[in-house]
Length: 166
Image (tube, rainbow, N blue to C red; front, side, top):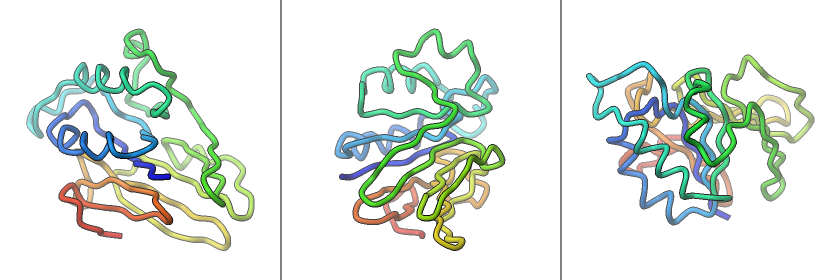
């Protein structure tokens, strides 16, 4: 199974449009929050949260979306998919615990993987038997590298041009 993880789009569509072919080839898209925003970031590119909503609305069961701190209630009226505060998913030998803000951490058990957004910094780290993963931000990276993560026989983080960075 090929799973794409993205986070922190904040309504900016330039890089989002670049990964649409990748979304279409993946079995599952997991969005870790802050897709829409009410704050505009027009100085960073085309701001069009409606485009993102319309695209996500047609994905059906392929999409799992976690609610971010910038995904406001007003957005939910236009969605035909739920915004989860927390989601747990079995993927191969992993139990994935999906959340937006890592400070809202839930109980982790040996072998679990916590996958989160919010920080805009890509990360794959291991502490004891647990994995901690963040795909970074697709549009407003704090490290200067727009990124996403793919699971396919393991986790890898890529820059927007498809180069492995972690």
